[in-house]
Length: 135
Image (cartoon, rainbow, N blue to C red; front, side):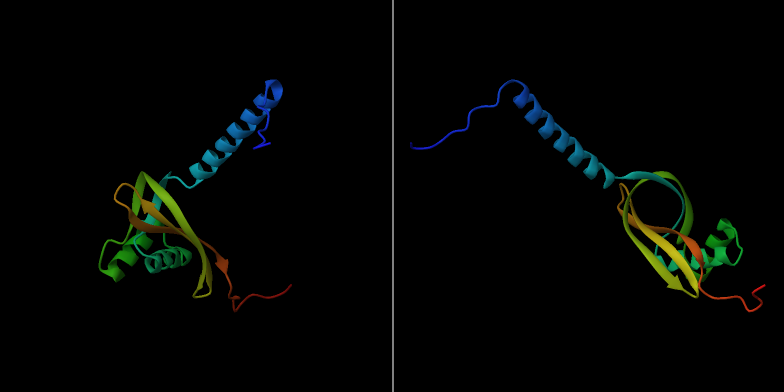
């Protein structure tokens, strides 16, 4: 024999093979859809350091507007601001410990201008209070 060919799938076997291929295409498409852009809104800062400063101000008790104003004044530029719903691609996530606080930060790339902005939240504190006591 010069070469062996497999017999062509017929009937239910062919349908099962086509279904398996279709399912793998759908799973691949769904996985790549997770890497696509999302609609986001809220306070974002232009740099990671400004986002940490913004979240630190909030942890001190400031509301979002006052925290953004404090960061913008110290940076001498409009770094932190509220953004209405817009399209952004989420990128790297980071957990950062700074000044005794634990932050969860995430970088977003805003579309269509492809500018990077940071968002985040404060998880908690690693420092114990001086007046904390066991009862």
